Amino acid sequence: MTVVTRFAPSPTGFLHIGGARTALFNWLYARGRGGKMLLRIEDTDRERSTQAAIDAILDGLKWLGVAWDGEVVYQFSRAARHREVVETLLASGHAYRCYASHEELTQMREAARREGRAKLYDGRWRDRDPADAPPGVKPAIRLKAPATGETVIEDQVQGRVVWQNENLDDLVLLRSDGTPTYMLAVVVDDHDMAVTHVIRGDDHLTNAARQKQIYDALGWAVPVMAHIPLIHGPDGSKLSKRHGALGVDAYRALGYLPVALRNYLVRLGWSHGDQEIFSTEEMVAAFDLPQIGRSPARFDFAKLESLNGHYIRQTADTALLDAIDQLLPHLAGGAELAAKLTPALRLQLLTAMPSLKERAKTLIDLIDSASFLLSDRPIALDDKAKALLTAEAQGLLADVSVELTAVEPWTPQTTEHAVRNFAERRGAKLGAVAQPLRAALTGRTTSPGIFEVLAVLGKSESLARLADQTAR
Image 1 (cartoon, rainbow, N blue to C red):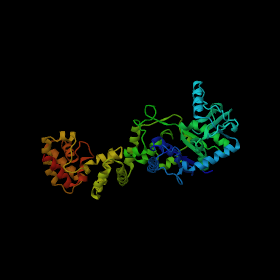
Image 2 (image 1 turned 45 degrees about the horizontal axis):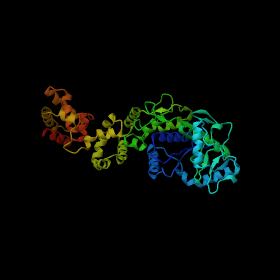
Image 3 (image 1 turned 30 degrees about the vertical axis):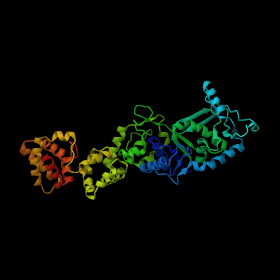
Image 4 (image 1 turned 120 degrees about the horizontal axis):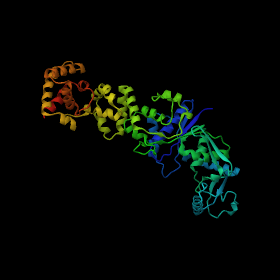
């Protein structure tokens, strides 16, 4: 049997972080077994489905590195097939026409809630003679669900889940306007797409009972089910924007690498010993459904940042520059920054990258710490740098500039030798000279190593920046 999974988002908003994890789990499970992961856009809610959301979902999956097999399936386009299946259910006696009015249905729901019953529809048209149908009323089509016994799902994550059929009413398959319901469409599409494993959030667990009843009525095999717990915030409450409930596009704009986000997401609720760092190949080989816990995973931004920092340090300098290029279109002011990246400046950035990436947790950190390269003269000073460049410090810079003018060749080693000799002659500590140098050259009091900064800027630019500050 070929394993076939599917990711089936509704295009009513961005690809949120929980959806991204669901897609990743489906992808890993299929890839690890030589199978396929299909993508279905469940766009039957025409009022809320948008092309912008569809584009965001597709773009987010591509950026995350989760590739689907075959063409994207759009659920709305399959409505005729869904109606065809309903006709077979009517013909076999597993479905019936319901002529209950909106007012009647409202009264049924209110009565059920008053009496504490889960079953909202009272089945009044289940065995009624169609000849009693009120004239001119278009019926909904309902499943004739089993009234007694149990509906059981052997879930790969949740274990054995049982519902009493007496608590499940006859769900609507086709609305009175002829549009298929979500419950029906999902079953038909999964069957027609030969889906063998349904891996989705546990907010769909109740749906599984209703969908199994449809499968049984049609005589179709039920896919293996795996309902994964939702993601909660660090405090255990429902994940919100303050916790990290953002779209995948937001994580890209925050400067996270897709490989780091994949690694972080796979460990949200899935365990494999004490291992935290996984290559894609290791994830594919190790991932399995029974290792997913039943409790909600907790989102931890600090852990994600730490993991991202690890991947930044492990990534080749040229690949990081490529990642910055890909990030800039998603940043405010990114186009202006991209225009500044001349071939000469890109070479400087590559030269500085080994130092820059040691401290960076995100690509934004990398860009921010490289701002000294991107600044126009005279560079702006932050408040700490301004406070450091006192009249005495400016005099010191003027003197060390004379020392540096004679340095050849211009390397981290030669500039460090010159500055150390200068500090010793002055009877000063190295930091007393290096800190004003850093403030004058970068506009900040923190930066990569000051001698790496001198080397990356080059002799001419370094001396010019020092002159700018000593001429104030």
